[in-house]
Image 1 (tube, protein in one colour):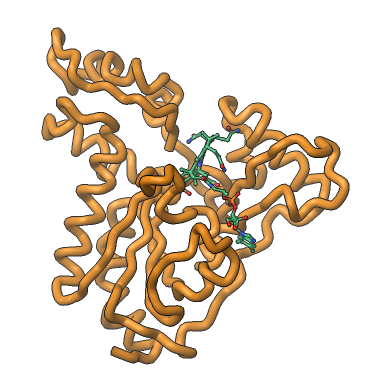
Image 2 (spheres, helix red, strand yellow):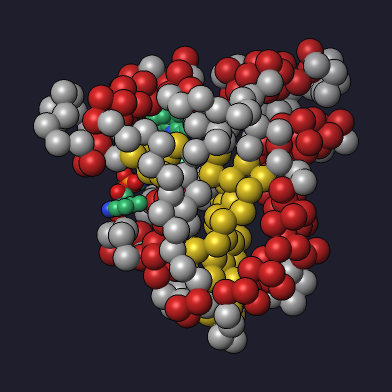
Length: 261
Ligand code: B12
């Protein structure tokens, strides 16, 4: 089905966007071809270049709007990572409600291929969709860290680093052709010095979260959300018990990754 941008955005994407926005998520459209144009062969997504995809970000309010209510339902018992579980459940249910007639492949940030590569590169997807600019070490000439391996980081124009990239939705039978125009993500960390500072914070002291405040932001994680993500994953079950979301003797909730939001 070849569709004009207006039709796709208004008729297909808008209901999903509104529904996820109300729950603390943001949704940005992209074409698979934009993503495949920049990643290496090993990371190519096997869809035609004009296929419509959506990248989904969680914003700070997701914690209060969706995660705390999810915990109150008692669904976190025995779950490996309660946030991942909650996000997956929310996105899947919004997709089936808002896109009932579409065939949608949903991939989450934590999903890996058998060769242990991520199923999609979340930062690249966010950048090509215009959601958050991906600052990569390769953008900086003669970096002060020399040949040391450094990871890149996305910065959102309104949220700085206070967000996570959660999922890629591919609408397999929607081709958008020339109608969907690519928008560059705002370049909010523009000077070389600021970019060096950003990458150093993200790589050398990411646990203090100062990379998230590299620019002034409209929203941040609440004290309760910070407490949750700052707690090492293997101790989050105990924290949920203290908060009253798990019964006293329960030991089932185990999280094995070292993941924050
Ligand atoms: C594996 C992984 C890790 C590994 C390795 C990191 C890495 N970047 O390789 C480890 C465990 C170290 C890690 C740590 C952290 N991670 Co991590 N991690 C991931 C994960 C699952 C995959 C990343 C990956 O393997 N990349 C592979 C490499 C090869 O990709 P790449 O370097 O970007 O290379 C590609 C681009 O350069 C692209 N490309 C080439 N040319 C061009 C040109 C342009 C213009 C563009 C856009 C792209 C592009 O092509 C290359 C591939 O061919 C992602 C989620 C995901 N599914 O993407 C989260 C993710 C990157 N992690 C994230 C975070 C927050 C962290 C931590 C802070 C911990 C945490 N979760 O709180 C730490 C910080 C890093 C540190 N100092 O240790 C966030 C980053 C958010 C952001 N704002 O950018 C992500 C996106 C998860 C999320 N849900 O939001 N992580």
